[in-house]
Image 1 (cartoon, rainbow, N blue to C red):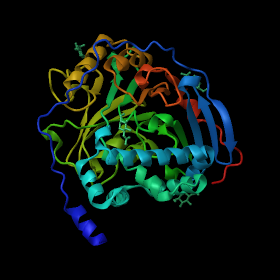
Image 2: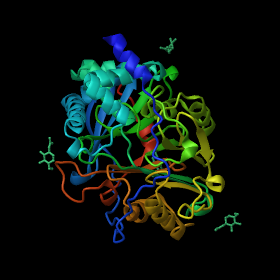
Image 3: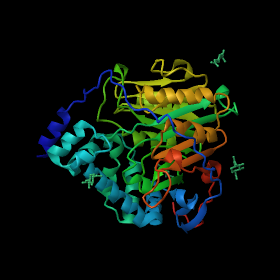
Image 4: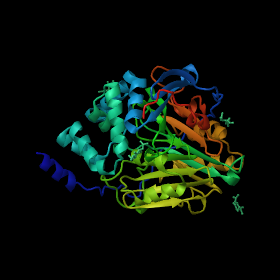
Length: 441
Ligand SMILES: *[C@@H]1O[C@H](CO)[C@@H](O)[C@H](O)[C@H]1NC(C)=O
Ligand SMILES: *[C@@H]1O[C@H](CO)[C@@H](O)[C@H](O)[C@H]1NC(C)=O
Ligand SMILES: *[C@@H]1O[C@H](CO)[C@@H](O)[C@H](O)[C@H]1NC(C)=O
Ligand SMILES: *[C@@H]1O[C@H](CO)[C@@H](O)[C@H](O)[C@H]1NC(C)=O
């Protein structure tokens, strides 16, 4: 049986390609700026344990958790599980249930699962299909990931395999997101680097109920340096975040590629782990360029990596076949709806996506020379209507971040993150958080 499954699995190919199609959506022409004041008060301490601390930050209707974890990968996962316990378990269960519903009820399907995955599910069931995916990516996954998942599992009483399985969801779906890297003449403060990560994905799903910033403080340098994951409770892959080397990551799922992308593959490193490796281990943009060039890449994406130390940003065309690194002067794709803008790299929602890209370009041109993280949050993102689930804007020179999350089921106000209140985070302070004096290595 296992052999037969493996055979079918290995024989499946991924040449499926929608040629020359473009995305159809565009923002509402009446979209309004985000007029909420930015929340800038300090996080409030909730709890301290042996290897971790729990804070909350933000107003009642726009708050999220911040946890700090110290130690080995296992001990950091354990601290996460001890601090967040039931909430982490609920998150993992909710994502699992969400994935099941997406498959059982295609009419209500709101995330687009990869065709080959749906076929695996039809043939073998959801558990086995996810286990095949884990098998296809295991060799490319850092051992720290499995150790951390074990610590989380032990401390929060969550099935270990279930934690691994839900982490495959990023690889199986395509969000349509946006990014900006801006520096020099585009900014109000020219000697700085600004980066946007807008996540458009599954606002109907469970993620919006579990916003969390997880600040990792590895105690052995073989496990990298301090970094912060902006994501969700119980989630240990990276969708965005910043590290203590003034670097940040952005990502867009590409559903409308052109022929320059070549092939996709299902064998390789899940992108949420690759992005995490960048945050955790890379010291410079060049480290990340090498990592991405050398990686066993999988699906079609656009990645963004910024380095505030020398104010450089690259937008990366990413697939199994190619890794191309673009800056402002050689930005691709070349199209009238994607004009080159000095000292700016940008992508709106997809690779071939005129409707969103031209509104993003227009906002960036309008505010060229005046851009600040606040202006991106108030006058760019809400007009482009991008970042329904999460928006992060980084000032990689000042070590500041703005973070907004979608309306949780227990909150009121506008549904989308881009219309809600931002919380300002002083990343220098987060990375310098004093460890509890009870820490175990
Ligand atoms: C599908 O969506 C409809 C309308 O929102 C809802 O009534 C129904 O319960 C959903 N089905 C499932 C299985 O979630
Ligand atoms: C750090 O990790 C390395 C590699 O796992 C190990 O050899 C070393 O003993 C560790 N150092 C400390 C201080 O634990
Ligand atoms: C872009 O920058 C170049 C060199 O700094 C300058 O010559 C050019 O006029 C700028 N273009 C625009 C549209 O600002
Ligand atoms: C962030 O916190 C550090 C340490 O407290 C402080 O020196 C710095 O000025 C703060 N940054 C901003 C932009 O407020």
